[in-house]
Image 1 (cartoon, rainbow, N blue to C red):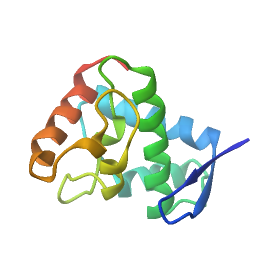
Image 2 (image 1 turned 60 degrees about the horizontal axis):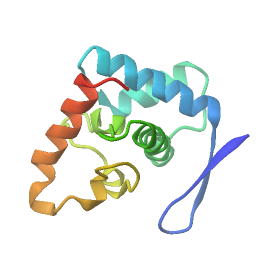
Image 3 (image 1 turned 90 degrees about the vertical axis):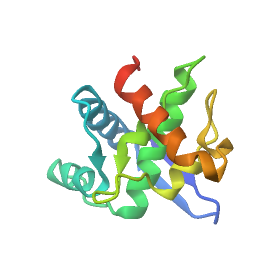
Image 4 (image 1 turned 90 degrees about the horizontal axis):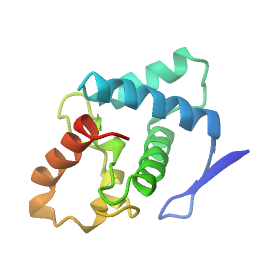
Length: 131
């Protein structure tokens, strides 16, 4: 059974559960190694595993689903694993990261002038906390 993500424009994206599990595994491996995972590298890793319907739009939805699941299960201090999935050259998260609404300290609440500082904290939590 697929997970269906619906974005703010009403577009539906079916995501196979096994894809979410695979992305979770990749993000965890990078977190343990204390490395950022570029979106392009994640896309290549998934395609190498045989996932063909992967692109920049679907990657964001899959990564967001991983963060939604982990943030809901890591209370009282929610962890947002997608904080370490970044654009290769800037090490910034995708715009969708700042729309995450689940957990104890959701990114969508972060004021614009505090995003850089807050992102560093989210990333530190992914690297240092158990999840």
